[in-house]
Length: 520
Ligand SMILES: Nc1ncnc2c1ncn2[C@@H]1O[C@H](COP(=O)(O)OP(=O)(O)OP(=O)(O)O)[C@@H](O)[C@H]1O
Ligand SMILES: [Mg+2]
Image (cartoon, rainbow, N blue to C red):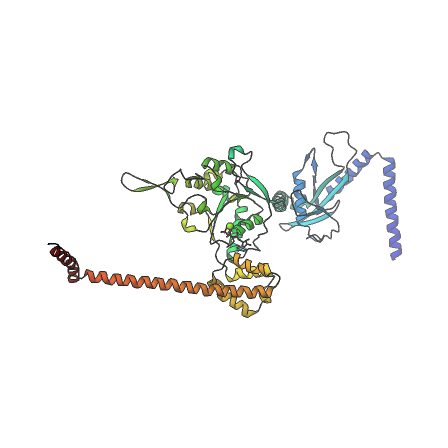
């Protein structure tokens, strides 16, 4: 068949269809027409190998949560440049931004289609939008357009896919929603008594830029923490099965400026959790602590910074028993009991709060304590079940240094002079420099990478020299003390020999006798 004949046949077919459609519109009333179309669609479905599920935006008078979940979920499979991750080549996307969020989500335009693959099964989504019939008066006017998604699945895949696929979509959409929304930072330190406040927590938008990518720390350790957090967030079933409260405690310890607070921000951004910054010194007593906790939401991180100075947890109160032995009374702190100045939150109050007792107030909570002095903390606080993961944030090591050079100066390892890199690698550990101090040097010279690197190398070398000197001095002092001790030891030993001891004793007596003689 020639091309021209082909096009003529097509044109006449389309003409025929349009003619039928006009007749239909002229002859049949809209209701009949709609019924007829429905009948044809049903007929088509009976013979088709697919099954269709309609998910309308408004279900009766309520918003259909599943519609929103599907919309969010499908938006995550649509990338920024408009091409979807699956085979279709959507050219039109809808853009939306939810209130209180700085991110834009992409969605399917009207009557557009997208395929998705779940557990190896390909499904087809269509975004169906039709004009709503003219509506009678209603207190809750319905939107002009009737929107919905139609899910097309192969009949043989229905059992395999339907329930698990929809559950997966709802879970995923929850995660996307949380990630898109702003984090909130709640604080209790407003200096007003809890009763006088309507809500015990104050909240502000939390936009800390720290992420696990920007965090300079040992990559292995970073990976372990991220896996641990992921496992926790996905662990609802595990915690239910094991009958444990769905909570997890992290203790971050190390010198100032090593990234403890930055790690907390990175955890919140990674999980999409809000942060409750609990200032214990503002909490009057245990019952107030309990009230504060009852008002925290799930999917949150409850932070107590510098726990060693928040409340005196160094020594627990001791009660002397009749028989002279001691027993610990966690209700007391520091031996002085409840009359501690300021907060009278006690160790037991804190232990309960991190334990099952109070953590049943809402689940999926992470507790993070930070300290510069782990040695000061009471072992009761450190056991697993309370502080499940102890993370040491230490001085900068070479892998962390490279992350900082990349973050601040956009310098990759291969961009740098190997000699300079070698110098840095050799002295960074001995220099005992914190990432905060390294960041300071790099920020100061961020417009001139060469100068920044030069200055960093000289700072590292200076610190090494200073450290060697102080180590040397310390050694000398120790040696000095050792010599003194040795001399004392020698004297003592000499004294311990019988004749020397007697002479010494008698010597005294002789002296005493002389004095006595004189006095006579
Ligand atoms: N490991 C790190 N990775 C990236 N930046 C860091 C790191 N440690 C510190 N910094 C930088 O130093 C600054 C202070 O860090 P941060 O507040 O996290 O330290 P910290 O350990 O909480 O200190 P402190 O014990 O005094 O509270 C941060 O703003 C951050 O830019
Ligand atoms: Mg800090």
